[in-house]
Every structure is written in C-alpha cells, then in structure tokens.
Image 1 (cartoon, rainbow, N blue to C red):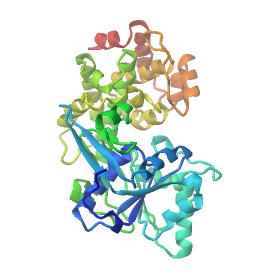
Image 2: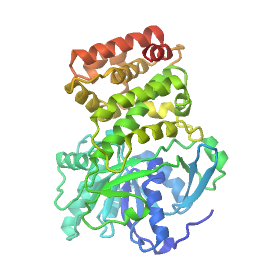
Image 3: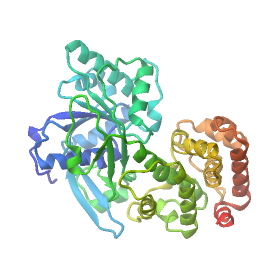
Image 4: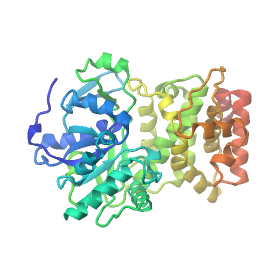
Length: 433
C-alpha cells in the first residue's frame, strides 16, 4: 500500500475524534492530511475513538493498515482520484477499555476533541451509559485534577449551532465545562456508504476505503482553547459567525435531500442521481428551494442561485450512487433539525409552505412501510415503532409535529398525503408542476 509523503512516525495526535465513520475520513481527516503534507503540523494528527461496540469493525479495518486508508473522489465523468490518507494514527474502542479512552482525552497532547455522533447523538443520556458525554466529562475532570487546561470540543454534526448544542447538552449532563471552547462549524461532502462494488472498482489494499464527491466545504468558527491547526491554509473558511453558512447548508442541501428521498423512493427510484436526473423531480426541487430561501440570511461570499444549481448537479453525479435509503434513515432526528424550523419561520411570516408540507406528507407516506407497488419499506429510524405507528394510525402530525399546530400547515399536509395515496408520487408532482 502506498504511504503519505510525510513521516508518520514523527506525528502526535493533537485531535481525538469521537465517531470515526466514512464522513469523518472523507472530510476532517482529509483536511488534516492536507495540512500534514504541508509540514509544520506534526502535533495535529488524529486518534479515533469509537463509542459503540460495533466500532470495533472500523478499528480493525484501520489497524490492519496502520491507520492508512484509501480515499476515492468520484467525478461525474467517471474518473476517480485516489489518495492514501495518513492523518489517523490509530483508533480505539471505548467499551473495550473505558479507562484508556478517558486517558487518551486527558492526555496533555490532546487539544481538540471533535465529534461526528449524528444528529440524534446529542440527546442527554443517563450517567450509567457509556457515551461520548461520559468520556468528555470524565476526561475534563481528570485534566482538572492533573492541572491540565481544558481542550476544545469541536462538533462536526449537521445541527444548527452545533457548538452551542454540544455545550448545552454537556451542561445538562452535569459536566464541568470551565475553560472549554465550543466552536460551531458547517461541514459538507456527500459520502455514501462504501459498497462491495466500490471495493471491486478501487481494488484498494485496505478493507474499508471511503468514497466521496469532489465538492468539499468546511466553515469553522475561530474559537479554540489551546490553539488549532492552520485550517485556512487548506481551504477551510475560518470565520467569526458560522450561522449563515449553517442555515444555507442545512436548509438547502440537507433539506433538499429529504425533499427528494421519500418521494423518489415511493416513485421507484433507489439512488439520488436517478431522482435528480428526472426533470419532474428537478422542478419540484427548485420550487422547494425557492420556498426555503426567504428564511436564509445573506451568506458572505456565496451566490445563493449558483449554490442551488450546484446542489442539483452534485445530487445528479452518477458516480456517487448515493442511496435514497441512506437519505431516508433516521428522519425523526433529521426533520426536526432541518425542516421544522423552516416551516415555523415561513408560517410566522405568512409565506407559503406547500412544498415543505409535501415533504412532510411524503415522509408520513414512506413511514407507513409499504411502497406504491405494495413492497415493504425498511424504515431505519431510532424511533421506528413510534414513527410507523403514527403514520399508519393517522396521527403523524399530532405525534411528530405538535409544535406546529397551525391549521394552514396541517391542511396542506393533509391534502398532500391524500394526493400521494390517490395519485402516487409522480402524478402528485405532475399535478403541482
């Protein structure tokens, strides 16, 4: 296996990342790798920590090649750029040795603890559970006892104000956060699940390569307790206020993913590029984004019209083969973060919510668990039973959108759901075009 063009034996891990998955390896770890290639960042490599027993699989895959892995960037024309990433020095699994995981975070070399723990990972657990909350709280307490300054907690999850959310969650958990900084960030790179087809195409020596699109973006608030790498040298936008970028990405990109995912699946599609190559769906997506845009603030340096066009082009990249099943998963954690606030703002402003209502209706129709051809749908959601029961029993809005009691919104969802049942997804979109 090829090796990166820097001496990994001279590196130390200044970053501990909790939640090592495909996105982290295609995004933050790739940025750090680019910095290491420039030199003068030897103390900013990464050590990964898995919080779940299932993370042992990722640990074993990385360990088999000394932490090295293949990153494959897939372009729409079919070309593939390959590189070997060496920024992850190793990975441990907390359930196998909790004390060792806490020690890793408490090490004076650790100056940043970063997170990709999913949108649902910020619900405050009990103190008895082994979670990232416990690792952070216990390691901060240990650092205080040893006279070591607190590190920075850097969330990289798709949540508006993710730094503030992480702080509040840890405060509610009871952690002592004296001296801890919580920069917010916006992260963006479509990273589908690695398939056996990908492995065969890449013929990579490592068992778990990661594939991604060419586009990558990271906007980061400059608020760090013990310094940070010079992320701006490798394309990170380091800013004072991340929120405009977060709103743009969450409401346009993530919201648009939900807009096409359920309707596309109901219509018989299984990949995002199939949906976004269909003019009927592209037209709906354009109307959806036009409905959302009035809730955004001006975004420095961004042409919003161009950004919307770029999203459709990115979604239509046939090389990525991003599954609708991935986009439909864990909706009960995603929709409240990405779409409910938009609906609330539009209702308060007296603006239309028809396209957003159709998205909510399509989720309800999808959550019934049977598609338009009568085939079962595998609903993947931490609240699967609750969501499916609410959809099948006609109490979806009462159960999942009780904070949006307005008759106008409920009537719009009701009409859209009735259309989906009577006409199907394609005919519903045709009738609205």
